[in-house]
Amino acid sequence: MTVFDDLVGQDQAIAVLSRAAAAAGEVVAGGRGAGMTHAWLFTGPPGSGREDAARAFAAALLCPDGGCGHCDQCHQVLIGSHPDLESVRPEGLSYSVKQTRELILRAAGAPTQGRWRVILFEDADRATESAANALLKAIEEPPPRTVWLLCAPAPDDMMITIRSRCRLVNLTTPGTEAVAHVLATRHSVPWETARFAARAAQGHIGRARALALDEGVRARREAVLSIPRSLTGVGECVSAAERLVKTAEEEAAAATTALNESETSELRKLYGEGSSGKGLNRGLVRGGAGALKELEDRQKSRATRIKRDSLDAALLELVSFYRDVLAMQFAAAGVELANDDLRFDLDQLAKSSTPEETLRRIDAIMQCRERLAANVNPQMAVEAMMLALRP
Image 1: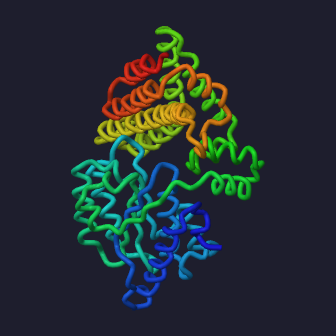
Image 2: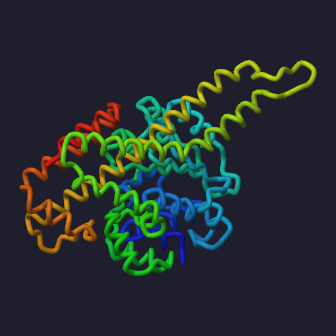
Image 3: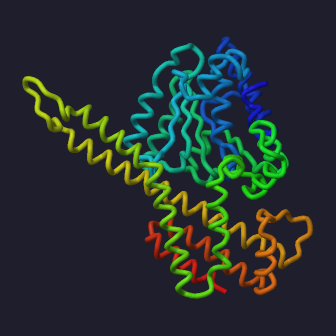
């Protein structure tokens, strides 16, 4: 049992990281530690486990036994409470240069327990250009015993100067059987349900887990995949777009409302609102209004990110549906259908349209994703897509 056991279908990456962890142990003992470097870039498609691999590697670096998986050091890393691990996950649309500089200052400290100071930067591709330049300088001149673990979907998502200074660990999409095995053995999911979830999630481990364990997630998937057969006219296209955008807004509100209230309340207390006593008033002290405005901006950015991620997940579900239609139109032998449970709908659409029309619809969905990423009004972008999907 090691910290790497939870990485599904990543044997090659595990071998690289295990050797590096052993080399890191040699460095701590005063040796050369060939194979260990101060900056790593973890890449791979959504659901491949980039952050899980980086966190497992962090545990292996901080564990005296190279990531045994059962000591206090490993446990603290895996739950995010280890004093020598700085874990960063951008919540908004981007990660600013101010936030990056604050992170670099925190990274400059020496490890408290004598091994390594590890900075795990999830979604590092969200760093702005100025933030990436600041990050580059920190990676070029790292403090002793500081290790940067950056995560991004693909190497090209990072500045070439940052890529060239990092050792690349590329993760792949795990197979259906491997993901189903994890769901069945670790979460006691019945095999048929596990295999359905793994197939529908197309190797995305987190998505597969949610589909297997959460009835609400399965219901939302069914609602999205019912869209193609509902687009019988312009009015139906507009209604479908409204439902999709409204669902994304509701998910963003559900995920942020309570957190926003808590953050705002804590900040107001920090700046003295409600305090009493000599020299104090019950309003915010100087600087409080500016800090409150900055917090509100971050909260809006976070809500926008969650809404955009929710819409993007729905669009990817639609892409998988039309990809299956295309596979049936070409009678591609041996191609596993992600939505095999909807084979009747797939077959009906495959027979009533041409491969060229299916490709056009897939292009329309991908164009909608690009428009949303470019901050086009979601309702307008999704409506245009729905009209393009109409038979």
